Image (cartoon, rainbow, N blue to C red; front, side):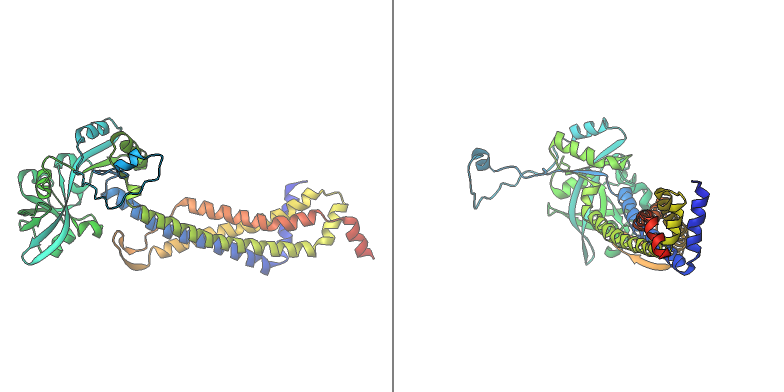
Length: 418
């Protein structure tokens, strides 16, 4: 049968009940609009968080430790038996990455990858009567600028100054503020060697991540080795990739080939990323409930029309209209409701995103800092919302449509005549 007739009848049915039709469209539109607004808000925070991590942190960190502890000698001997070991004091292994050159050569062959050796040294910095715990990273400036954005993040000084000032240190802005130091001041540093040495402040950086700016500093590699009392040793290798999504695969290969623990950025910050996943699950479940309610509204209105138009349906069937025409007629009603709700819902969602982006709010967290809501206004959110709106509306109309198609015209017309 011609499609225009089917659409014309479906539209006439909906026009006869304007209040219920508008109610169903409004329910679908609210569900779609809420989905777009909440998704933009949630994904905005996540995208900003991940972007900052990718920007300021290495994509892979090779550490001077194995992924799992080495088995005890008795465990290696009694592999088939039950052994209990008590009171064993394991010997502290000599820490440090010994085959640095081999790992760096390996990474040199890796496409679009840069690597730099690092010595991580926990220290206490003192200036006058103020003492602050900090982590100093011993670096080789020429190599480190390829794996970090420290050059860009400097607010004073230059990374190349580390090569010219033997005892120079570059401090995070928050750490310098807490110590009360400025450029050219000298701070005392005491590490694992227990020797206190003076470091001259030759640079101050700001990444925008308080967790880093308030705890970290950079010195020459050999100076960090002195503070740790481990000459000619490094305990980390920082790796940066052009494609950060390759981090997990590269980390697993490095562990397999070299034996040292290699952490991709997804693992280092896994707890926060897992929290984001949980929040997404809860939010999308709640929004799914909104779409379910929208589908129920469509079911109600199409069911009502089906019951009211049972005689008209019988007449159509008796005139030779097939069951699939009747089914299609009521499905088209659901489709019209779904498309109308999707259009208004997308407009509502876009307005909500625009409005949220202009609401002043202070966000001061360990990673995220902003005076506005962080939003990710992605076209895919609108597509998902529209598809869900249309799908739930059509599903809501499916059962009444099948019931209408199963109507026996003889029974209906005999009942009406009697």
